[in-house]
Structure formats: C-alpha cells, structure tokens
Image (cartoon, rainbow, N blue to C red; front, side, top):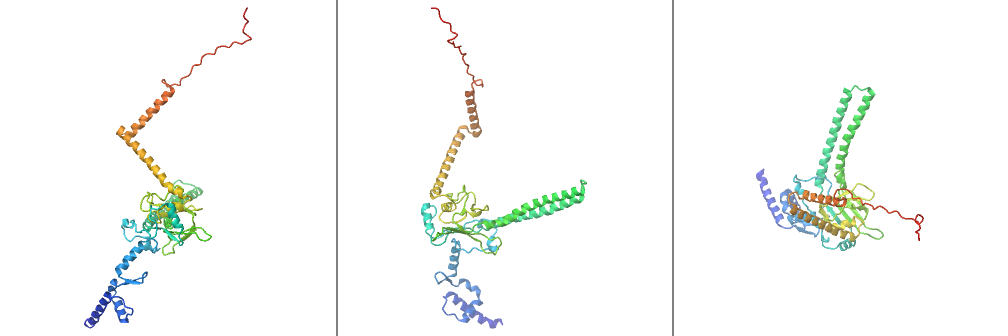
Length: 395
C-alpha cells in the first residue's frame, strides 16, 4: 500500500514546492488548495498579504513588521487573560526591560518649550494617546504573591486561634464560673477574629491593587461647547473581563501638590527613585498608580501641567528650583570636604567640639570672667535741699 501511495506523495511534494517558490495566482484550483492543506509544514515560507498596502510580502518580513508594530504605543492589543498577566519566563530581568518605542508624530522629549508642546497638543482634533505603560506582569506577580502569603497567614491564624480558644474553654485552668468562662471565650474569639481578618483584608487588598494600575491615557481635545477630557484604562479585577474605561474632565484627575512627575532624568525625563506616581480623582481618597516606565507624550512637563493647577511658568520654573537645591547640596559638600581636610579623622566630632567651645566662650564673655552676671553699683543719691528748710543767710 505504501508503494501505491508513493507516486501521489511525490507529486504532492513537487506541487507544494512550486507553490512556495511562485507567487499566488488569482485563480487556484481545488486540487492545489487540497494539496496545500495537506502539507502545513510548508506554509511557513509562504507569502502573506499586508493589510495596509494590500500587497503580498514574505512571512519573515510580515512577522518583523508585526513585532515592530507591537512595540509602537497604541498599536498593541492589551488582553486580559491569565497569560497576559504573568511572565512567560522566570527571568524577571527580561520582563523589566523596556519594550515600547517612541510614537511617531510626537514631539521629541526635552527639546521644545513647554508652551509650544502644550499648544501642539491642544491643537489636536482627535483623541491623542499621551501615555502607555509597559506590561504590568511583574506587578501582578508580586501582588498575587503577597496576597497568597497574607491569605494563608490569615487562615492559619484563624484555625490555630480557634483551637487554642476551644482548649482554654474546655480546660478552664483558672476554675472560673460559667458566666466568666463564657465571657472569656467571647473575648478570645473576638481577638482571634481581629488577628485573622486584618491580614485577610491586606491579602484581598493586594488582589485588588492591580485594578488601580493605569494602562493607557488619552487626551480628548476640547470641542464645541465642552472642555478637554481625560480617558484612561485600567485592569479588570478578574481575568477575561472587559477592560475598564474611565472618562473625566481635565482637572478632575490630579497629582499630589508636592509630587513632581518631571525629574529631568531618563529619556522622557520622568525617572526617579520611586517607580511610580499617584493620580487622585477629586473627591476620592484611593489614588490611581502610574508606572514611570512607559511611553510619555513629549516629556514629564506635560503631565505636571495637565494633572495639576500650576501654570506653564510655574512648571518651567520648577526645574530651576531643583537646580538651586543642587547648588545648595554642592556648597554643603564643599564645606564638608574643607572640614575633612582641616581636621582629618573624626572631623565631624572635632568640628562639633570646636563649635561648642566657641559657644561656651561667647557665653562666658556675656556673663563675665567669674561666671556671674556683673551688677552695676549705683552711686548714693545726695539729699536735695528744699527751699523751705534752707535757712536765710545773715547779711
């Protein structure tokens, strides 16, 4: 039977090779289609159609184009499956590497004045993507890990606490009366419930935390009779659920008064010792979390302006404040270096001792040499002669 099928197999192999080397034809025969589906391993090198330009390209070029497209902000499909929430490898350093490229048509960071960039943003007629975060897979890993730890600790505390409470009630080592024993049992039960529910609430809080992570932010320009709006997306609480979308007027979502998004460090000027910053909706206490590792429209100055009540001049001058603070730190370090050269080892203690001696000498100079406050001696007053008591002179 194998010998009978051998000619058909060789014919199919030859036809498949010719279909790979040649381009697609407008009309394909049913036999050719059947032969194609019979040999799927030869499909990897077939040409594919580019939907944008409506032409055929090679499979390798199509895959490279798809990879680049997924790295452009706004082009990648953000899923909500379990596979989208967890890393595909245990090498977390690979997940921490940035993957997003700068979006085409966006002003170059740290190049243009803030007023010019903001005017360019306001002139948009369509919603403009101004932020996209890197995949939050590491956030999900750490949040779920801490949630499991606290939930297991809570269940363990409740089980062990109940066993101890029942044992103490059954033993009654202090020979308490029934009503006192019942009261003690209730008190121990309340303590166990509190100690068990506290870590349980913390664990559920870690499960809920990813729902406050912002994934994308759009700037909706002002239109006829309405102001500008902000639209952003977060993660759903459960996987395979629709992506939550929130829309609010510009100014309702603001950063903290003392917080600064723009630091002047990094490609977008937002790198800082903290990996994220908070945006709080007016009237609500729980903030949203924005990862500093991601795509930012322009640079961080735009976000300091949009998510605050500061003017353009105040945002621009905030960088000068940092420069002044940096000059103060440089001056302080220079003074410390001079003291280190002057006193050598233990220069801090020696300098502090010298300051103490100077203070003591100043106090002594104020109090006097004997350490007592000098009292000024008053001269005795001479008795004044009144005109009534004065005797008239004999002439």
